[in-house]
Length: 296
Image (cartoon, rainbow, N blue to C red; front, side, top):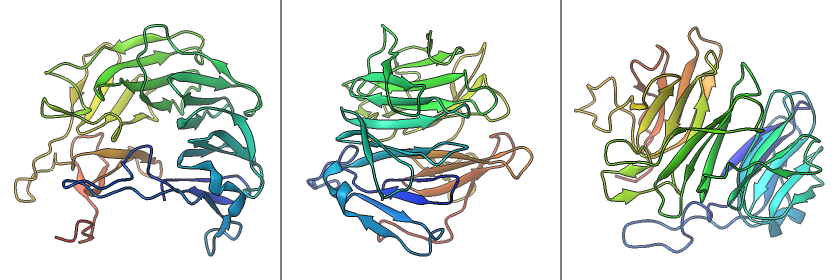
């Protein structure tokens, strides 16, 4: 299971297949990823799921999202962008490997398609390329401000798996500015140490729901950028025997917000489980309850 989305009718769809992010063949230092088996759908709010056999040819389902106020669910796959209004019948929308797809609160859709950033204003029927001319994209994570759907960000890694730049648009993707340049030895959240770039494996971005000019970047490290300041790391990779309130495990893949708290709680999903911050990113707490995924 690689991604999940739920539409306004309560239909839940999840996609399978890790091959775009984790090699299918195992190595001495890593396990193989799972092959995709298509999309699975629940129409009873998760009590049971049915495999949609017509989607088994989609390859890896890399990313999913749904309209905030509509039926349509979108899937970014190795075989291109697909959409469905009922979870059962899927329509091909655009060719090309899609690693990321996000829907803004106004219904505009943004996606990475191949080495391009693309946008649809008509519910995925047609797409336009809106890639900045100075962008080097092998994988990109996209984030849209909940406050203002015109504020769109993406963080890109290049073919070398290092940070190639973070870009912002304040007009819904018509124009872009590079707010963070290519990674260096002093700042690159996508690189472990100085020698192990992992931008194709861990690359995730979110916008503070209370501040459209504040983003949180997840890679090997967790980092932030605020308008008018330099980017900085905000968490440690060292646990210090369980006594470090700034510890967040390496390799971030999911950043979500719990809006039921004040301030909102950031939830970070990574190779070490789930970590929560409910105090404006000052401290983090592991919420793993002894769940060990490595078998150690």
